[in-house]
Image 1: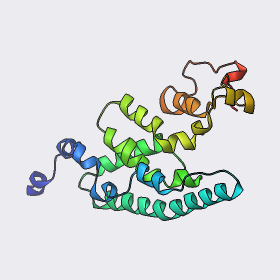
Image 2: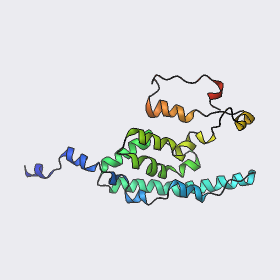
Image 3: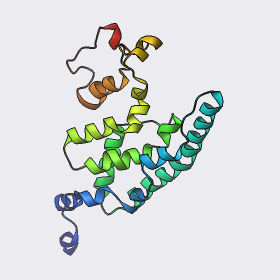
Image 4: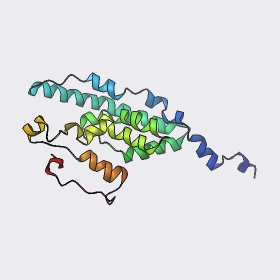
Length: 193
């Protein structure tokens, strides 16, 4: 019966893991951030050659950074003394998911998790929601970066308007759910462009 005395008490063991310091393990902290990665890209120019150069640079960044980000996350999960923290990170990263389908977003998945999820893991949901929603990876993934005011000169000239992808995901997936009691806008200027 002596083995029972040395076994950790589950509640105490879990509670001991809920320390903000455990949310940013060394392998993840060593990754470059969003700002550094965006600064490393060439300034987008005009014309087909400039666009192609920029896209090639974004693809190169994604091919280089995405495997490093995934390896750092895996190393953190395997070596941790706080597995509950890593499970919470995985849960919230999945809840506020961004996909590697787009090269620029793929190159920001590691920083998204490190900058938007991990620092707010033990705070309030509102702070986590705001941080995840406003991170460049989420704005690019859900096309909010291409959203344009429908009544602006550029919006009228291009015949474009607000992109509702981010708002819809925020309402349907991140907070209220599909049957959350809200209604979709009926105004043509608020429809997806």
